[in-house]
Length: 99
Image 1 (cartoon, one colour):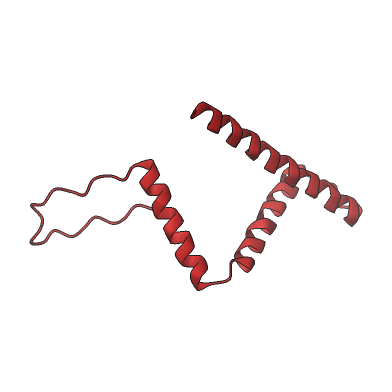
Image 2 (image 1 turned 60 degrees about the vertical axis):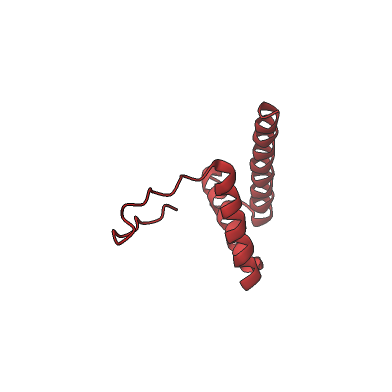
């Protein structure tokens, strides 16, 4: 998230701070996540995120409304596994390109 510009004041003549490198941005984000999880339980947030993913994938599947709940859950589980496998493949390819 971009930070708002600093208000002009006594130090307005000083040069603007340098932009962060991708590695520094990643490190800053990691610090923020660690600070957050030190203050709160990540379980409820993770469950909300997982349920949101399942809901989105279920919507994308366009399942018939009269589908048996067990079959609906099985298909959504398969869609989640497919999604995660696609992410793993993309990550693997990105790591290989970075070598």
